[in-house]
Image 1: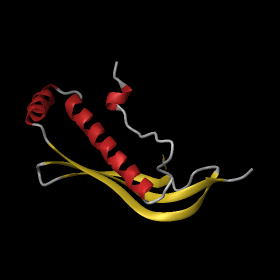
Image 2 (image 1 turned 135 degrees about the vertical axis):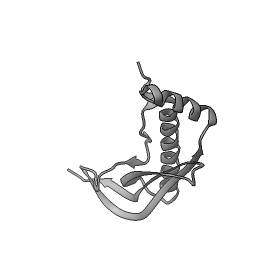
Image 3 (image 1 turned 90 degrees about the vertical axis):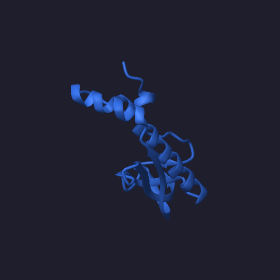
Length: 123
C-alpha cells in the first residue's frame, strides 16, 4: 500500500487557502494582490537515474523519481504560500504547476497563482 504522504501532494495551511479555481464558493474577493510563485530546481541523482534506466526496461512506475517530483512540488507550493502570506494574502486563486527541464541538469518546478484577500459572504 502506498503512503499518501509520501506520494501525494497538496498543502493545507490554516491561513492561506490555495485553489485552482477563479473564485471560492461562499467567499468574495476583496483585493487582488497579484501574481505569486514558488520555484525549485532539483538536480538529478545519478543513482536514481541508473535505477530509472533499468526500471524503464521492465516497465512500471519509477518510484524514486515520483517521490522526488512530489517533494519538488511540495517545496514549490511551500514557497508559493510563503510569498503570498508575506504580501498579505489569505488565498491563492488559479494555482498551477509548471515543470520544465533545467538545462539538462535537473527539473524546474514552479507553482504559481494569483494572491488575493478573500472574506466570507454574509448569509
